[in-house]
Each structure stands twice: as C-alpha cells, then as structure tokens.
Image (cartoon, rainbow, N blue to C red; front, side, top):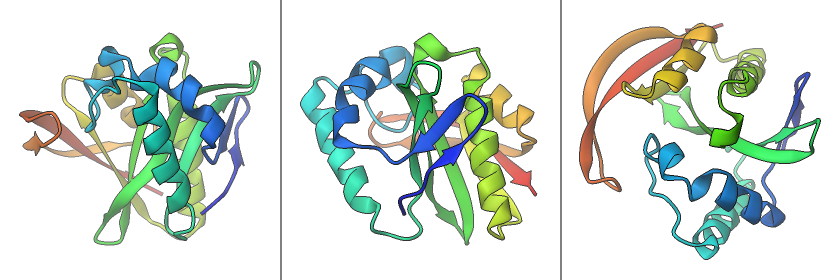
Length: 172
C-alpha cells in the first residue's frame, strides 16, 4: 500500500527507485548497521537497486507497509521502517537507520508514528523483535511502550548464525 505519514521532523513515504544511492551509502553497505538485521550487507549498489525494485512491486499488496524515513530539515533519506509480516494477524515491525543519524530520537519518532497508524486502524497490539545485543534498538522499543515478553535463540539463515532475540509487544 502506498501511504505517506508525517511527524514533526520526519516524512515516512514509499520507497522510490531514486532512493538507491542514499540507501546503499546510508545503511545497506554499512556492516555496523546490517549486523543487527536479518539480511547481509550489500556489496554493491546493484543489490540495493534490486531490493528496492522488489519493495516497490510489493506496494500493490494492500497489507504491505514499507516506508522510507526522510529527514524533513535536509530532505534526506535516513532509514526505513516497515511491517515485515503478520504473526497470527498481529503486525510485526522492523526498521533500520543510517548510523550517522543514530541517537537523535529519529527511530523512536518513526516507530511511534507507525504504531499510532496501526493502532488507529484497529490493531490492539504490535510485535517488534530486536537482537539482544542491539542496545539502541531495544531502547527504541522500550521508549515506544514495548513490553519484553521473552528472549530466545533464533537462527538467522542469511547470517548463518544463531542470535538471541528479545521479543516485545506494544499495546494500544
């Protein structure tokens, strides 16, 4: 679904093909960012272009919510946030942010915006997972009202390793 949301400092909008460069150089090629994601670091911009084209084609699906996070003050793409899937009808959120923009409250603001949208559309709760070692992401979830329901080992196929995952629920 193509949808645009807005906060005081951010615009959450659909990704576009011309986002490839900002995405690649902002976070997709940064090992420090992708070590906490379920996908591997992009080795070249062609991989990023391929992924963007997949995402853009998925906008035809009404349940698909995938947003580019744009910093209003610079009109700059700084990250992404989306509903990565549904667990028994409950939306599951995932996100990433260019390291240059960490520790400014942007992801908390974007996450709260998406949560508010989901709650206003009838969802009573949302799930968010984070690797236990990802202190920043766990903090974002907690600031957004996330309640830790369990910590468990999870095998990440693309990383070929098992990680500890904190599983949170955020209720409306």
